[in-house]
Image 1 (cartoon, protein in one colour):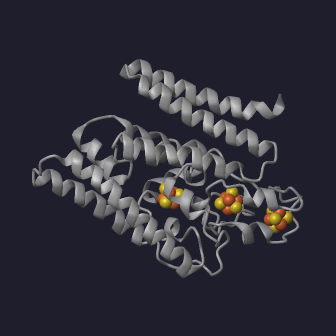
Image 2 (tube, rainbow, N blue to C red):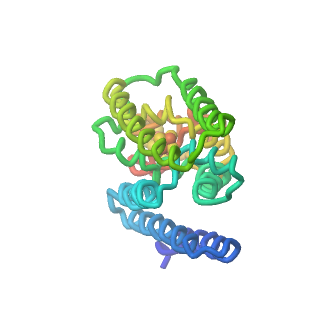
Length: 272
Ligand code: SF4
Ligand code: SF4
Ligand code: SF4
């Protein structure tokens, strides 16, 4: 029963969101959508508590493929950042805007960058590459994410200002082309920098939302200093170069933690 507590709690939170949106927006899709995501995450947490090695990958594939294939390609919703700007400008509080509000803007106040560890369809592919732990020090290239962020905003604004017709169709193709480019750049960078998560660290524009919000996250990995023997293993296995032994919010790369639990699994003294 103890192992079921957390999965049930997560499922309940998602069901509250699912039922609230279903009733307020009178759309059964929200009931299906958030129930599916809640069930996938709960299943992953349950598998993790039972010690299953690939629990996180299971959630990544269940949620990532659902969003990419079903919502993106079949329902033709642009779930990337351009889609967020597009639905925001049209004043439609639908899939992409709700998705951003829940997973990437307000949700990180509670679960930090859990999205990046368990649901992102870009990282779902990048995490299959061979460099799970970075093989070289971090580069000072984080500024690229701001360029990408502004570029996406300028792109969508320009479409509206130029009064281009059928923007919805353009958004669909922007989603297809954007994903192909993201995967290509992500894979090239992973091999060039010997780091699967190089794309997340330097390029991804969504981190402009995720990083400041996750700074205040309730859910954080903490270190019990009495148990820590300073072996450094947690830092070596961390895909995001986080100094997890420092409990302050200002810890090095603190807003980069994706809650993947690799440090927790590998700590020899269970200090995390
Ligand atoms: S940083 Fe961007 S690409 Fe990486 S996991 Fe998070 S949302 Fe996905
Ligand atoms: S792996 Fe555990 S014991 Fe080693 S430095 Fe990290 S927290 Fe401390
Ligand atoms: S290894 Fe630990 S500190 Fe690093 S991203 Fe994963 S959970 Fe966060």
